[in-house]
Image: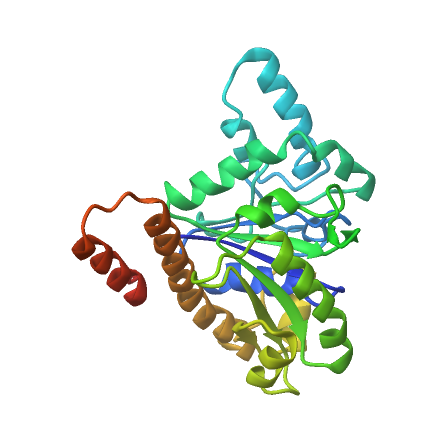
Length: 300
């Protein structure tokens, strides 16, 4: 379906936005919490969600920080790591099609992930492309080093290979001011090719400025807009049973409505990239692929 990464220049509601998008839809979804500053899902949204017939509770033995050890064991035994990664996925609710990979328990664990990124990225891409699940990445707050994404303190390998990278920006002057240099850094980092649909866009959070004005100011398209709803956002952060009517709140309805256009945008981008690499033999074939890319791929 789509591999969509959310990041921010500051703590601007990335985790809440990513969780809302994962919870709002009816499609299978994997939410990967790859914030190198440490994860918060295990202390809120996932805290009281049981797993398995014994209704186990989430503890420190599960999560992103355990994958380097699992990868080492896999390398030593020559086994496939995918089943081990699956063991570190936790249900987000009582459904069987929304799961999360809980994040780090300590920021100092980030350095240990260097060797796991190619394997984890492969699993995320297979979940998207073969299993047809949506994959939403909470990339947290961006950290730059010399104008580039920090190789340890950001999930840079995943961001470079995502279908879409959404910079979450609140509709305030401060947030937009902090976002501007990050847009420029991401544009350089992601090697965006002219003539292809943007893989970098904005997720406008809240109200206050027209999205078109924000897009012009930051020189990046607004690909999604979520109104801020503090009561629903607090419920998502807190976890447990969602309050009555939360699924019909402004935040959740907007999150649900945002996913289909984002998938279509991701599909158009993939088709454009395939068109660039495919060896087409006739102008008619090229024209047909271009028309298909312009229309996008319909979704259920």
